[in-house]
Length: 82
Image (cartoon, rainbow, N blue to C red; front, side):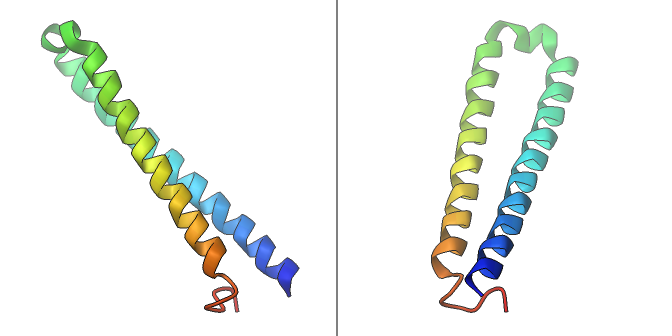
């Protein structure tokens, strides 16, 4: 039974990583569209965009890791995979 739970945890980890890649992809597309339309204005402070996007990605990664850790801590307690 424990091996079943760990294989399901690996499946959930894949979903969490997929969600993180999807979020980063969508944010990258939005930033690309914004910068391509406003490059004359935004070109001077491009580094601020990079810092902002970097902070967003780090915060999302921390959130996804905490979700995985929470699932891992409670997977036997709540019978999540039954």
